[in-house]
Structures are given as structure tokens and as C-alpha cells.
Length: 267
Image 1 (spheres, rainbow, N blue to C red):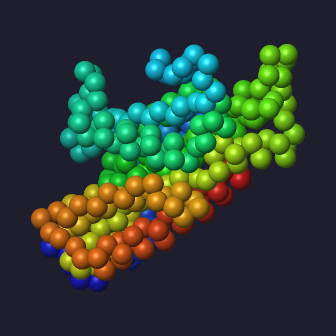
Image 2 (cartoon, helix red, strand yellow; image 1 turned 60 degrees about the vertical axis):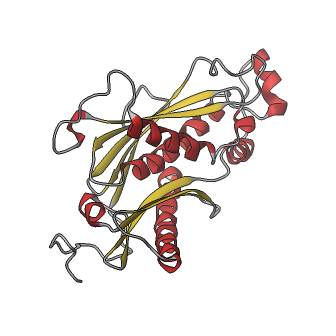
């Protein structure tokens, strides 16, 4: 494989993603938590159920809401990243919005019911693709949280919600599975891809990303539909054929992530 412009030689083949490790319930206090490692990028995603819906919701709302927050921890980068104590800055806000709308794309908020969930994505170590890793980690944590809310009789089908006023409602295994699939019919995951000296690479770590002529973030649901495609030429341009190649590479990589998500939650 040819050397890139900085003189380094990639250590992975073009379509090879980094090793994935997933630890469920890494922290005990969250409704659901996932420690997600993609190569040397490490994200902790924690889901909490809020006490109430956002203030801008109507009082008699029947649907829920999913929000996300994202943060780089101080020691996640090679030089200390200063905490954003006065509120999220521009880049952080943009990533938070991306993560949140990606998760909401996979959830039927009406089926969720009047429940507000917050997913905190804290990057413990950053080596490229942190926003994509956050989406994939949060997707796992969100499904686990929804599964638990259903099991606890908190998240119920619309025609069973009134029963909760008389006591805890326990759904059968089949009913619980059907409702989970109604609330979150598809998984969601994301991957970064890039164009480096005419070659397409999937799952960019920091070194690949810093050498990329074009980098792109792709978010998809497990039914094969796109949530978002963010592509930028870094002092470069790209053709429609190269765009198609980037999307094809990302699609194949995300299929691997979906398989990992499914296997992890099945276990």
C-alpha cells in the first residue's frame, strides 16, 4: 500500500474497520450505559429518564422526546481539553444536535409515550470518529433503556397506558418485543469514511482523518436508510463517482456495526 502525503503507511486495509469492544452497564446509576471502544476512540454513553418532558411540550402530550449531550473529557486528547463550563461551544453544539436527531430518527416518539430520555456521550479517549462512535454507542444504550422501561411497565402501548393508573402493567414477552420494535423499529449507527490520494478508506482514525483529502460522516438506520451524510473536501474536491464510492464504503462498514449491535444486545 502506498504511503500517504505525510509519509505514513496505513495499517488497515481500505474497508477494514477498527476493533469494536462494547461493555454494557459500565456505570450502575444510569438507566442504561455503554462503554464503547472503536480502536483507540472510547465513548461512555449513559441514558437517564428525565423527571418530566421539556417545558415547551404541551401538558397533555402523548409523545416523548430524546435529547443528547456530547463532551470531550479533559484527558481525551493529547493536550488537555478544557471543560466547557459556560455552555457548549459551536463544535460541541453541532455534534450534540447530530447525535440527538440521529437517535430520534430511529425512535417513534408517539410509541415511546410521554417520556423524556437524555443520552450523555462522554468521549474518554479521542482518536478520530468521536461523533460517529457516539451515535453508535448511544444507539445501543437507547435500545437497552427502552427495553428496560418496557419491562418496568413505564413505556407501554397506547391502549395499555390507562392500566398503569391501577398498578404496574406487565407485558408478555411477545408484547414487550412487539412494543420495543414499535418504539425503536431500527437500530442507528454511524461511520466516518475518507478519500486519501484517490483511495477510499472506512472508519478514519486521527492519522487517516488528518491526511484525508475528503472526509465524510454517514449515519444510517438498520433498514438501509440514511439519516445524514456530511461530506467535506479538505482543500480538495471530489467527483460523483468518488462520492458514490465513499457512500458504498460507509454503507458496508455500518452493516458491520449493526451486526455488532444486534449480537451485543442479544447476549
